[in-house]
Amino acid sequence: MIEVLHTGIHSSIQDLGRLGMQNLGVPIGGAMDQNAMQLANRLVNNPLQCAVLEMSFKGPKLRFHQPTTLALAGADMKARLNNEPINNLTAIRIKEKDIIQFGTAHQGKRCYLAVAGGFKTPKLLGSRSQYLGITPEATICKNKLIPIDTKKINFRKGAHIAAHPNACHKIQVYQGPEYHLLPKKAQEQLNEQSFTISVNNSRMAYVLEEKLTHQLPSIWTAPVLPGTVQCTPDGTLIILMRDAQTTGGYPRILQLSDAGINQLAQKSTQDRFQFELTEA
Amino acid sequence: MKSERPFRCFTLHPKVVLLEWSTPPDAALLQQLIGFQKAILKEVDEVVQITQGYCSLMLYHKSEVHYIENYANRLYALFESLTAPIRTKQKIWEIPVCYEEELAPDLKSLAKQLKMSTAKLIHTHTSVSYQVYFIGFLPGFLYLSGLPSVLECDRKAKPIPKIERGSVAIGGKQTGIYPLDSPGGWHRIGKTPYPLFDPKKKKTCFAQAGDTIQFKSISKSDYFALETQRANGTLEILPL
Image (cartoon, rainbow over all chains, first blue to last red; front, side, top):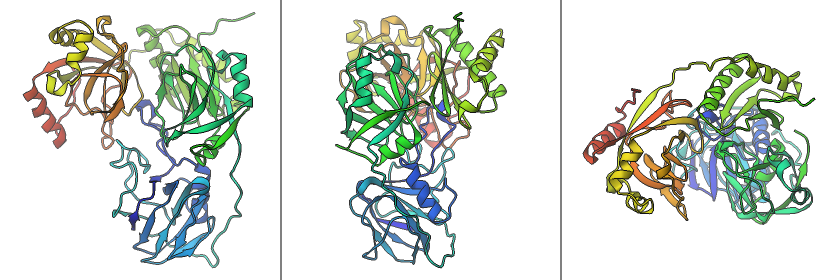
């Protein structure tokens, strides 16, 4: 068990989500940056789909009620184990009563904590990913105990992966189904301009500050995916993220690649980036 | 020579293909979409899931679709090979709704906007049947067609932060039931005690595309009696 002493800003249990239930309106969900999530799992010898703790912007303070091995990947949250700094991308042995504390995110916005064997909260609709309405809570709760696996892994010297910067300015996208209806000028704008993430960003969607000039017709409500870029009548761009609804009525002008979603997940308010169009 | 294709086949992600029909949605297209989904899931091994919109299908695949040989033509041929719409078991569900003011906070204002009495509004809403087009927006949210045109209305200028689970609402040309608490811009005209989405049940959502929904007006006391049963987990929904 892990006891939550402080929750941080937005910390939730996430695995790879609920793929296969979208015809019931269930969002896919899952870790925002699945690359970092899987790296953390790899370091503690877990299957890649094991549930981890996703920590956004500012991390929590946690007390371990059992020994385990953990690893961190993604943003650097200046983690401290019993007040001593520890590094990301390294397997670390934990004893009972150890306390881990996280600060504000640097070089990214989300950090992933994997433990040997994974987090063991109940599975609902095939996944442990927290989503309000399917799971009772959207995030971890103060003073609650979170179950984790009791698996012990042996290592002489902790596994380690060399850090690689994830501060990519270009986000890979494909054309969306309504892209070809955009005027040439708007297409050029998408290809050449830099875009800024507005304060309105969450696990569900990122709204951008810059607007697009267009006269796209509205569409009949149709399926969307995480990474779909919608364009509202006033030209506002909405990038759907992991907890996005399954259908939408706004034209879909771009689609982020899987790598693009992972990269965007490490950005937040006022961060800037460019779209890089490629073929699906 | 330009051949007429029945639908557009668009790859929007290496593993996802969108099929889109250019005709507006109607009952005939809905039956074709339902039949075609069944056929694809049966015939195309690579497809793991299909989601549906009013005039489109989204196909999710195990691996990247450019490895599938001649895929678009295979799908066109499969669609052409479907003859009469496949008769699937399409059910009729009667949803009990309490339209009394306490459970219908926007009924009066909407009746005023539509220039009709609340009794007329309720009668109009319950006098027709609605068809389930697909499920989306929220877990278990049914997209219904068939709202009488006299009930079409503007959405609220500002969405309200919480529309309660079970609320029956009208917005634009649509009517629907909120399966979970959610922000929303529709007018709440009643409330149903029926369990609409339960992640703990094997059949999480009672209805599916093609089913028919009818609303039946019930009293406040009936509502609360059924609501108690729902909270106890003893309320079963059965089709007519």
